Structures are given as structure tokens and as C-alpha cells.
Amino acid sequence: MSPENPKSSPRILIMLPCYNEEATIGGLLKEIQEMNSEYDTLVIDDGSQDQTFQIASALSPCIKLAVNLGIGGAIQTAIKYAYDNGYDFCIQVDGDGQHPPNQIQVLLENHEVSSASLVVGSRFIMDNQFQSTPARRVGIKIISKVIKGVFHFKITDPTSGFRLMDRKAMSLFSKRYPVDFPEPISLAIALEEDLLIAETPVVMKARETGVSSIIGLKTIAYMIRVVGYLFLIRIGRHI
Amino acid sequence: MEYQPTLQTVIFLSLFIVIYLFVLMRNTIRNAIDLYDFLLLSAVAIIPLFYILTPKWVVFLAKFIGVSFSFLILFGSLFVITFVYLYRLNIKLNQQNQKIILLVQEVGLLREALSREKGREHSKQEPRGN
Image (cartoon, rainbow over the protein chains, first blue to last red):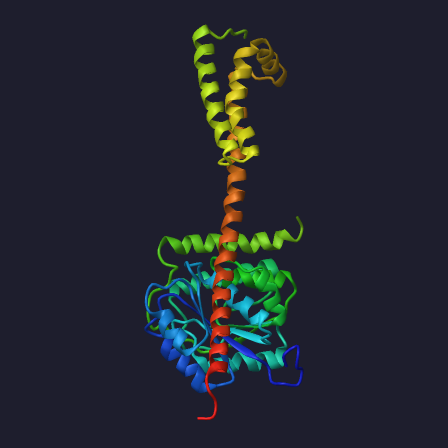
């Protein structure tokens, strides 16, 4: 279904942003490749200081960023790669093992039904699974409510990084993608550009290694920045 | 509210203005400072100069604006200039940040494309039929 060859099966790129993920990235890549050999993978090493690049580049194409840009900068690099190389879909899977590869198919199946340009995997539609810490859940609820209030769009997991993008979304995000805390802000950008967004239940795991970058005072900075940008993007249409 | 600057004030301020403007000008010629920034920064010297050279005008201006203490206008205008300068600086910093991100991304993408190309050429050169 690539633009050049409409009858062929869709070209899918799995984007794996990584920062010091030497412990998990090798296993994750092997798991994806064993599961479906038709998926292409791309690791974006966001300036790791450990052996992430060496391990990943032996198993998959890998982009090494000279300095750490943050998750937004890393993902945008992969989106540009996917768009320039004619992929029909790109799917973000975190390199820390939070997103089980067997759930990729769930996103694709949802796209088949909804034709949404952006399909977000949600932890909060189904119960009885890992759903993050209580404090984080409160933050996610607040962001959901702000999105509902400002954009009149219901989303249960606006901070989920497990998402599928089609070429329309790739075209938008390759030009405009937030650097910090990109997931909820990019949702607002997509809503403002009238992209069709869908959400589908997925199973996620607790991260296998490392700790979240949003801890302590950064949580407050995160909330101020995200909520502030959500309002600004909405107002942006009128100024 | 007539005031007359003393000779010492004129001497010290003139000295400051000459040295300050000389440093600014030299750095602007060496491209260390942008011309707009040079104009903004030189206002820090030109506005006080205006105050000591034209005291009657300053008093008129204070009366016209309705300020009883004429130096409020001096400090007010210096504050405005400082904020305009900071605003410009902020925009420039943000633009630089965007350019750095873009460059880092492009370098990464190019490096990957090059290594892919190298791999392709390498596989072409390998003898076939084993």
C-alpha cells in the first residue's frame, strides 16, 4: 500500500527511541523480528553513553544522535526517516520494554477499522493490567480532562507513547513535533490540524530498566508545560 | 523641578560613554554584536547623555508625561530597552535551539543513509555463487 505501489502490503516501520537501553534493546529487537519479519525496525539512539548503539546497530538500522535531544527530537528524527523512505505506517515502541511487541498488531487492526491517522494505545480502557503509579494516573486524568475541555475530544491515555501514525500524521509531525513531553502536545497539534485520532486498548508493562525522567519537581514542570501548550495550541488558531 | 548636572557628573558620565561606546563599536565591527543590539545597548549611554546635555528638555518631557521626578523616565526607558534586548535574545536563543535540533537530526539521518549505502556497495562487490 505504499504510495508508489498501491497493491503491495503496507510498509511498516517500528521506531524504537532509546537512551541508555543496552539491557533491553537487543532482546526487544529480536522479539520484534521473530514475531513479524515484515516489520522494518529503526532504533534512534538519543545520545546514549552505554553500548546501546553497538548492540542495536548489529541487529537493525540505527540512527545515532550526537547529543541527547529528548524523546521528541528522537521520535521526530524517526518520523522524518519513515516519511522520506516511503513507509505507510510508523509505530512508536519505547526501547525500555514498556510496550510489548505483540500489541503492535492491535494498533494496526484498529487503523484498519477506524482509518485514523493517529492510533494511540491506551492502558486505561481495559482493567487488570499495569496502569502506572497513582500519582501519574492523577496527572494523566488532568491532561485528559483538559483535552476534553479544550478540544472536545475524549482520550483516556494522552501520555501513551505507543502509537501508530499514517503518512498524513508523518507529514505533519515531520515538520512540527514538540521536543519536550511530546505525547499530549502532539495530540493537540493533530487535533488542531483535524487529523483523525483513535484509541485502542493495549497491554503495557512496567519499564524493565531505568527510571522515568519525569520525577520530583519535574512533574510540576511537566504539568505546567503540557497544560500551557494545550491552551496555547487551541488559542493559536485565533491569533 | 529644574536641575543642573555638576561638572563631575558630566566628566564621569562622558568618560563612561566614550569607553562604553568604543567597546561596543569595536565588538560590532568584529561581528561579535549585531547592529540592532549595538543600537539597543548604546542607548544605555545615549539616554543619560541626553539627560546631562539637555536638562531643560528633560524637565519639559517630565512635565509633559506627568512625572514629578524626571529620572523616572530615564530608568523607565532603560528598563524598556533591557526588556527589548532580553526579548530579542530569547527569540535568538530559541531559533538557535531549533537549528541545533534540526542539525543533530539531519546529521543522524545522513550518517545512517551513508552507512546503508556503504553496506549496499559492499554487498555488490562481494563475489557471488558460493
